[in-house]
Length: 116
Image 1 (spheres, rainbow, N blue to C red):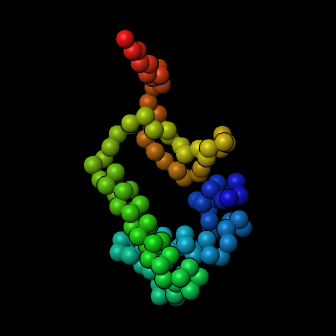
Image 2 (image 1 turned 60 degrees about the horizontal axis):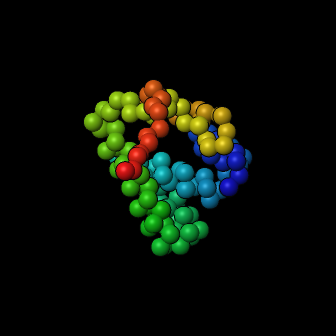
């Protein structure tokens, strides 16, 4: 995967690094997770044609699972659990714009175990 792709996800509509299929997948994920879902027939038809029916069903299932996780994790209003304030792509020091998570917790010493 090109290094720029994950960095450009927040601006995928205007980014040149995503293919037309990738843009359709991102648009579909947004539409499926809207309340209520707002998937246009033309978008679903393009994805079915490009991916095939089994992969389209799998894409739909994975988007739904991640949406469920997101809603379950945020519903109880969790507070800081040691996550960062920003989302940094591994191998870089660049924070993804618009990404928000809970404030950072203080660092802790690594756990050590002893055996007798």
